[in-house]
Amino acid sequence: MKVAANLAFVVPGGVGGSEEYSVRLLRALAALGSDDVDVTVIGSQQLFAEHAKLGGHACLPFRGPVHRRPYRIAVESTWLAHATRDFDLVHHFGGRIPARRPDIPTVLTVHDIQPLDMPENFSTLKQRYLAYALPRAIRGADVVVTPSAWVRGGIIDRFDLDPARVRVVSSTSDPGVVNGAVHPAVAALGDRPLIIYPAVSHPHKNHRVLLDALPAIIDAHPDVLVVFTGGRGRCAEPLDATSRAIDPAGRHIRHLGRVEAATLAELTARADVMAFPSRYEGFGLPVLEAMHRGTPVVAANTTAIPEVLGDAGVLVDPGDVDGWAQALSGLLADDVRRAELAVAGTARAEAYSPASSAAALLGVWRDAVG
Image 1 (spheres, rainbow, N blue to C red):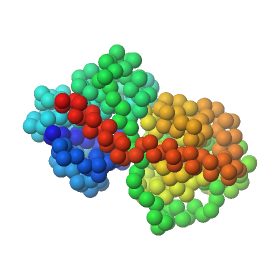
Image 2: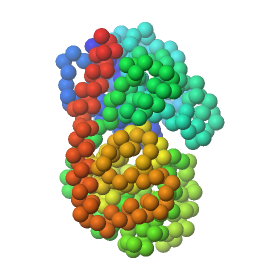
Image 3: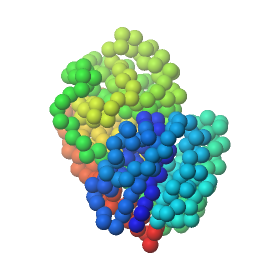
Image 4: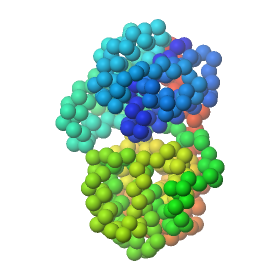
């Protein structure tokens, strides 16, 4: 079976968790190995420069201005349609199906349906495009893959799809190991109580509730440090202003921006707690990463997050400032509870192993072709 994995949507560092989901899953598939499946990954030259060889799969790069969405869409509907005509299956990992495509089975990954659930978080132009493109893609795919049961249920209900056409292939933990070679950015943080929140500053990521809770946390833990990582989104400037107002001396808040994967892994392992107050997640990969590395999690009790975290962390309403302050302060003060959650989280993360996710993906492909 020849499979084309379309990652043309990936702008390295610019599309958030969907990039990590796709790349990790394809690497897990290569590690699992399957004699009857031959995968070719399609993406920009920048993708393959960022993620060297993607675990050993064949790579088919395209050239051009990958940061321009209209260009990527044009590539998918012209060059990609021609390049994939001799494959047995095309899997589009980016939530859309090109206008032109070969007459072969099509699998589509839909990471979430936030454009339909929370259209206010998108520009007017993007709202209009996604309101057309996303339903068209979902209805046109032979099989739709989602990262969580929560997204699967939402798609089935909204589009009245046959449940057999919508399958869950979970995200997977990063098999990389923190090896003790501490990055200078991590070493500079010292031994203070550390809370980390890794997320692009988009509206739904809800950074503000954490900032609003911080004064109460500082009262209980005068040496606490909150570290934000992730690219600058639509809320970056207001969050900068709020941070300066709360912490004018810069003692308690650090915005590190986008950091390399190894540095983020070190930060996650070093943190006493990960806060994850996002209001909307199709999965919530940082929650899985924290559990995988034994870091306790306080997360929002909404969308797919409770499904991923289970009882291995603390869930709080995303709008409850006092609840966030109490949950985070309480964990920082309770070594025993943090240790219990670390053990529970590590055990729960095993359910999202690379091998199990890769096996689920292979099952989807075989069923789609067979």
